Length: 473
Image 1 (cartoon, rainbow, N blue to C red):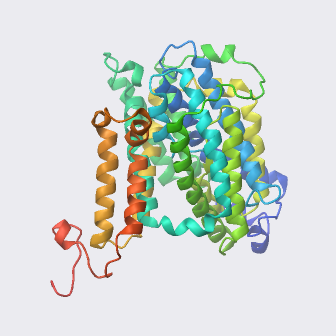
Image 2: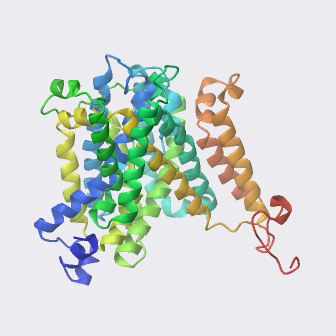
Image 3: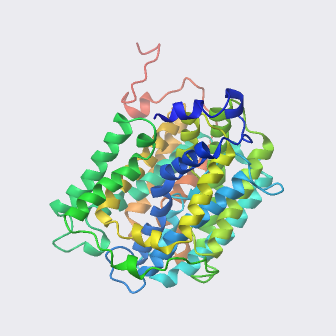
């Protein structure tokens, strides 16, 4: 049954646009699980990538490998907790809208340099940054409406594009066999690439040639297809599933707490960007689901909840949370605005997070299979940035801002050795590429004078942009 037909059978049009409407449980629960399917892979992937960068992830044969399973477990549990904070709320905290929270990709370019090859011990500094950055983001709820002017589509589009560009390398590495296999004969083998391509082809086929839940969960089902192929090729091991506990509760300060200036600065700066992303998602939900603008209380409440959800998650060893844009699109597609539907999905995530065997099962997915999914996901992140940039008026001023910011950010990311004489804190922050690009764009956008709207880019681009002016035609 198509998703849209499910939506129209559970209430009147007025009820479906009301966030406080509760559909019958028999239909609310499947719709809630559908939200989980849409975000599940994206939610657990950052934990897998951070563990891999630190050196105890897939293929590492590290005795600390079970710590990755714990991180996966916490990613599910605290995505559910943070979602409940948004949908149910308390006091001024929470938008009380159908906002799905999940682990953020945006912080990965900050986290990877912090942990690269340093093992579990490096995570104490990461979670110190997560907690402080989360509290900083919560404080932005007081002023979020007044700082949006500093982040027009030119800046936000560039930031999202840079996040995608920073991470596409990870997808290729995973598809070829993972970092531990680099330099070995099996890295980049035809078998590895075949499994990754199965995931990509299955995902694209489901996304564009099916409807309803099949299309919504295309990435997850594509991973299942790749997993079955990998299983047939003998690439799947269940050794860790038997060792995992049936039930476990979150452990406070599981990875410790350490104050690292680089981590705190990086997380606070990215929290600023994440807060604006959340504001955009809230606006998208109210427009797509209810046909209205978001209220000031909803925007502030969502920002409070975003930050507090991340801070609480960091205490227990979960990476920072943010609102998930793919679920905004799902609400627009289903037409079901009920926050209680998303609450059902959040309860499902919390239950999964309390069962370590779920995390252990996820850890059986071969890295090549995950690589296929990650190539699609991170490519889509970059494509989303390009889509946001389509709203920019490409006059000479904006083109120069974009050019300088992209050149410096991407260049520092590709040649980190260029910063070898910088202090360690500055080196970690700048080699992410994301922060220098973002703050160059913000600064230049605020400083450089506006040009006339008709002053386009022929002189810079050699007319490659296809602009035509009356005086040239």
